[in-house]
Image (cartoon, rainbow, N blue to C red; front, side, top):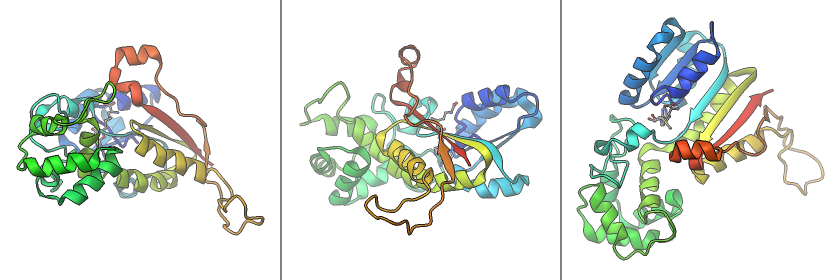
Length: 280
Ligand SMILES: C[S@@+](CC[C@H](N)C(=O)[O-])C[C@H]1O[C@@H](n2cnc3c(N)ncnc32)[C@H](O)[C@@H]1O
């Protein structure tokens, strides 16, 4: 199962690598992505099942297909290049677009609602928690003072005003990340899918997760660490009382990161981290 189909690049690789009989369930919440994936994967005909659904619906999807388990699950988290590069989707501050940022256009919450309606304190907390933005309070104050904020460029300008550039990144980078995470409930989805994915794998099946920022990667890392241990009692406790049993083994103690050559080819890969675990 590819839980984050996007344009179907990974899915095509999985299908080509599992010829002739490998079957693939592919999910994405974005109907536009699904359309691209359908086109790309059409040559694989009878071997694919593609659906507009969240990866968190995995158990129901498997039940519908009558599959007891799967051999592999891939999650390539976050937004796709197509989403970033379509100004109307509102993910990028490099182009002007509406404050949208929804992966799933039927989701009622947009970035505009957060930016123009949330109380300053809640906005600041969000920027701090999901953007790890040290200037969260100052930025929240500036946004509230500038309301109504109409689009991505205006939002980026409001953030940039009065904010010195720190390092190579635009000062709006972390705010945009925080908004996207909140609009799409990204961290909640990651927390929900990890145990469901492990449950859905057959013995020896593998779960591979690619994350692009430390908040996601931390969730995956901590889950893999905990679930690969037989006991999760506090380290100083002399006798185990938790009764916890390992359900996976970590295949990647350290995450796999892109090579220099990959980054040169695709600069968006630079912060990618791939972690893989195998069901016991
Ligand atoms: C980084 S892209 C994946 C790119 C893909 N691997 C490829 O080869 O083109 C992430 C995709 O996951 C989708 N997505 C995000 N959250 C999702 C969720 N909870 N369920 C299903 N798809 C999700 C996004 O809409 C986006 O298309």
